[in-house]
Image (cartoon, rainbow over all chains, first blue to last red; front, side, top):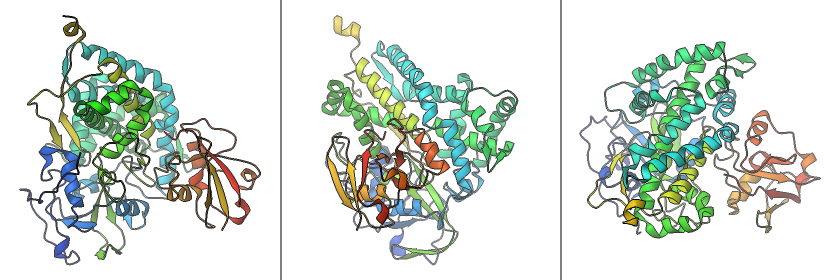
Length: 419
Length: 107
């Protein structure tokens, strides 16, 4: 596939912030990260427009309160590593949402962040993954077996929004019946529809989590929440408030990342029969294919607050400015990868920052990789041949975490093949 | 400049000149050794630069920090007594000639 030709960026109907004195006019782009121009043709092609050769590596948009956007892989990495200038104190856009964001350790910088990160690793890091590996395989196999005889499904609703959330609720030992409600609240943080502010959404998570945390402080189980609430930082137990903020982060991360990534992966495989057949013929290729899909279909665009003025890419960023660091742009950057829009499972360098970069690198990356690899293996084993029905529409959403809202798939059922 | 020898999972050996003070993960990535991933950029947050350090160089390394030790509990390839994260190994004259077996899988 050829690289997508960039189209002009067009205006959103949202309010525009006035251009501050430190923003040169040639740095201004019309880009609403929650509703970028061209979104309905695809999330990644819409963001890719920010890498148009006519644009500088660092641009500024008047939407969502006005903020910088780093558009190239090298600059995005540089800012993620420099936490002294680019602070996680306000890690989400728009700023008023980011300021209400209190989750731990994602709203902290080192050295304060370090001991809390260890708590997070204990709770949901790779050791936990080994414990749930069999359950992951079992659930994936069963869900797909149920779907298979239908001959069609909306993959997003019937698999992607079920599988990782159930696994996750099992790891934290929360009732599966609460999945839909929790997912709705989480979505208001990453792709708000205006029905709830960030503060209200966080409060709703805390109200939900609080009795579970109290219960597990008294009678711990083997689950991630029990592990987290009984851990220590700097030689003292975690406070209730800290426990809420760590568990809140875990909940948000578990509800809204793999869910979205799985739909992008299956969309790719449904529309690329040759590459799909490669994985059917050689399932050993699936871990490498997973990395290449992670490179091509990153999802997250978080942000940093500039703590001290700094010159970058020929402009002065002032203390108090916000910058979006779209991790999904790294893998799409032709300065990092040849033919970046093309998926090649045998690409030697599949490097990406889809799980972030620097001290906040995703603590659940091992779990995410296992969930994706397991899904690809089981789906292709049971439903090796599938496509998107003619005329079907795919729905995309953009935000802190990009999403596919609808992915209709069809295939021949075993019954249909026999008749 | 001191030298580091990376033994790749397929048995191939890559000899790399590494400036004093440079971390081995960074040197490997810059040299195009893709078997070392280094997802988090050297922040000891991801465990995707896992290596096995041969003697006598292993004993010349400072002991792993609590963070490195915790991450080594969680590597994709099994932890061995000589497992280290290469983002935490800083090159020095004392490490000249160091032989590092790169873990077979990082994810």
